[in-house]
Amino acid sequence: MDTWVNLLELEERARGKMPLMAYDYYAGGAEDEITLRANRAAFGRIALRPRMLVDVSAIDTSTTALGQRIAAPILVAPTAMQRLGHPDGELATARGAGAVETLMVVSTLATTSLEEVAAAASGPLWFQLYVYKDREITRALVQRAKAAGYKALCLTVDAVHSGRRERDVRNRFALPPEIQLANFSGPEMRMMPREGSGSALFTYISKMMDPALTWKDLAWFRSIAEMPILIKGILTAEDARLAVEHGVDGIVVSNHGGRQLDTAIATLDALREVVEAADGRAEVYVDGGARRGTDVLKALALGARGVLIGRPILWGLVLEGADGVKQVLQMLRHELEEAMLQVGCSTIPSITTALLKIS
Image 1 (cartoon, rainbow, N blue to C red):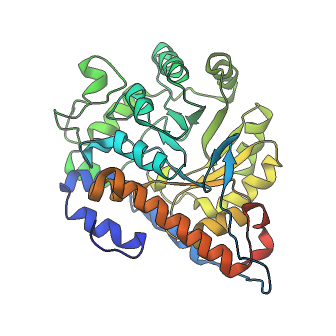
Image 2 (image 1 turned 135 degrees about the vertical axis):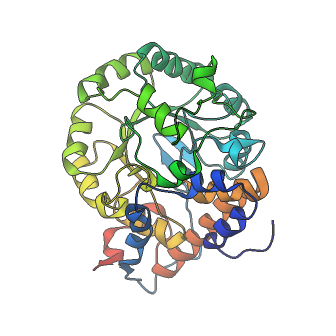
C-alpha cells in the first residue's frame, strides 16, 4: 500500500481504482446524504476531558463481544458485495480481520458464500441477516450460518425496503455478470437482474425483503437460531426497550450508513439513549462515521461495547486486499491506544462518560 497516515486519506485513493458505479455504491447514501455526513460530524461535537498523572505505561485494548475475546473493540461491519472492490472480496476481509484478532460480521448479500468465508476466517464471525418474504429462504440462511460456526445472528431491521440511493439510480446499479450473490441459488436470487431504468438493488430489496416483519417475529428467530441474536438498525430508546423485552442479546445502533432514511438521527447522537434504555440487559454496539481512534474512544465512553467499521474496511480492501483490511484495523487500534494514553485510561472498562464534554 502507498504510504498513508490516517483513514481519511483512503477513500480518494480507492476511488481512483474503482469503476464509478462500484465506488458510488460503496460511498453513497440516501437522497441528499445528510445522514451520511451527520454520522461523521457527530464525533466532532464531542470534546474529550483528559485526566493527568494516571499510570498508562501499559495499555490493554482487549475486550469481549458476546463472550468472544477480541483484541480491540473495533469490529468489521457487514458490507455487501465486496467482490466489487477486490477479486477476493469477503475472503480477504475475513483474513484481514482474523490477522488482528477481531470479529467480522458477514452480509447476507455477500459475493462469497458464508461457508467459504467461515473456512477462510481465523477470528469469530457473526452473520448479518436480511429477512426474506420467503421464510424458508431465511430459515435456510440461519441454519447454514449455525452449521458453519457463526457465533451470533445479526438481524437487520432497517432495510425491509430500500432507501432511495440516487447515485445508484443515476448509475443504474447492477452486479456485473461475473459477480453474484453467493449465498443463493437460481439466477433471480444470485444475479440481481436489472428491471427498468433505476437501481437493480432497489428493485431486488423491494421485491424480496419482508416489510411485514414485526417484534412478534423475534420468537420465531430465537426458535431457529440456537445462537445469540442482535438487532441492527435501532435508533431510539423506545425500540431499545422493546428489543430487550423481546430477549435480544445485543443491539447495533445503526442508520445503515446513511443509506436508508435521509435526515435520520446520527448514530452517535442516538447511542446514549439506546444504552440507557438497554440498561445493561443487552450489549450495545454502534456503527457509522468512525474514522479515528478518538471516535472509537468517544463511542465507548457513551456506553458502546464496540464500534463496527464499514466503509474504511472497503477502501482498504480495494487498495490492498486482506493486507489493506488488516492495516485499517491496525491503524484504528493504534490510534485508540494513543487516545487512551492521552486521556488517562489503561483499559477498556476505565473508559467512562466522565471523559466527555458534549456540546
